[in-house]
Image (cartoon, rainbow, N blue to C red; front, side, top):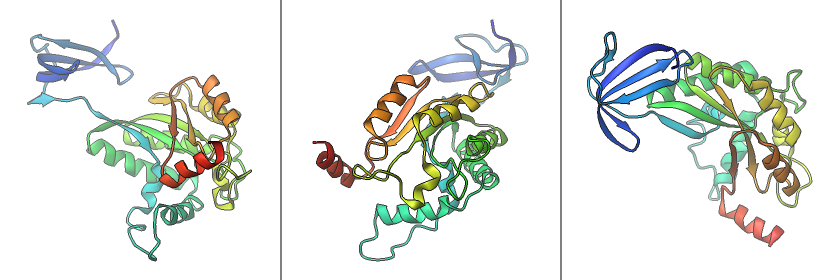
Length: 248
């Protein structure tokens, strides 16, 4: 039996898809649940919870750096302002954030998630390189900033470094304002390996979108990914139209 650091007891809790009565919740040394026992009397020393208990939520798709410009994009610049013009403003923020700033922004976001009932965040992370697009001396520098932020806030992190190779189906490379995103399957795995085994952090991988990665690279990443693999299949109907035009 795993060592128990702390115990709770709830008169009622949601366990296994239904309400259960008199539930003991034991926390292990790693911060995860060591045991969940139903129909038991309050153990000596356990903290008694006042009411019904629900499992915490998981934020399954986060871009933490975008928290830096919340409130700055809720405006209409012209009659054709849309997702793509919003994206251009977002890129402007992405081209300014340094690792220490990303850590501060992400810690703020993660604290807000905790306050909202979340206990785990899956970070769809594509802001990898230095301001000019060159790799940091530590290629996982920005990912480590996110891991530090999650530790600062006290939330679990699933890091999903993103494969991002091109600006669109017909493009050979990225746009200049996407320079910090550039990755190959090998680089994605190297970033994940750097964070693998860090307490409180799980790792996987992601494909930004079908338009942003070549089919061979997607297949390579999928075949070698050791963990969850996440993808934007399409964010906008224009992407669907482009995909049909490019691939049939």
